[in-house]
Image (cartoon, rainbow, N blue to C red; front, side):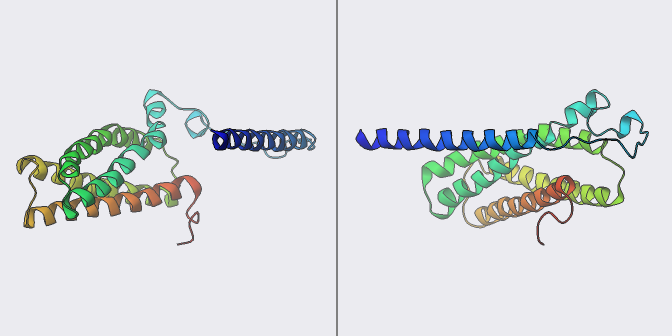
Amino acid sequence: MRRLAILVLLAGFASSALAMAAATAVSAADRAPAVEQISDVQTVSPGEVEGKPSGLFDLIGRLHPALVHFPIAWLVGLVLVDFVGLILRREAWHHLGIFVLAGMVLSLLPTAATGLLRAAHMPSDPAVHALLVTHRTLNFVMAALVLAAFALRLWRRNRLQGSWCIVYLALVFGATGLVLLAADFGGRMVYGPDFLPW
């Protein structure tokens, strides 16, 4: 009990120190000089303004960055569950895999829909468009692999042995590699092509 009290006390001190540092940073920012004049004004159409959605579909498409984490997490979780269930042969984990895979399939639907809606409203920069096409293509192939793995698991009634297990694992591991690669291209669209060092 005493250790818990010490940990709570240390956490309180740490949060207080962070709050004081944040307050200091905000007050320093308040003292920064304001912009004296606007030197370059450019007229843009409403569709070119990145800050505001240009309609309902653009607004829905902007949910894509919040949703992309779910299929990635489901798929990485599926790799871990399938590794324990199929490779280490733990029966309970093997049965759990179908539910994790179903969660992955269900999370694909809103993520893909919002991604396609967002793609229709992206800026027309050729570099961004090239990244977008690669990102979209990788995700379509990844979705096809996931759906094939799900169909195989349903067809085999969740009993994967021998060569069927190898085919299934190849689909899942291949899809996981593709989703991570597609995520890299998505990050480059948002943060710029040189965001990561490769």
